Length: 99
Image (cartoon, rainbow, N blue to C red):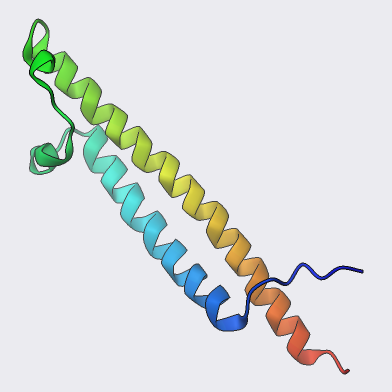
């Protein structure tokens, strides 16, 4: 039977810690972008055309799009965190097996 273990215990633990941090950070950024935080205005990709016509609605749409992108990235980090957690568990089980 093929083993699903493909990374060591230190790499798996590091992936788990970074995933937890990434989920928290990106979820908070997503919340702040969707509430149109003025502090994050430099991180929104404005163009000159966004200020024509319904300028405020265009800006809010860009804020929301960046916020949704942060939420999508947080979900990807949840997936990587789950994979890292599985690797940590497989590494712990491998320690207890008698060869």
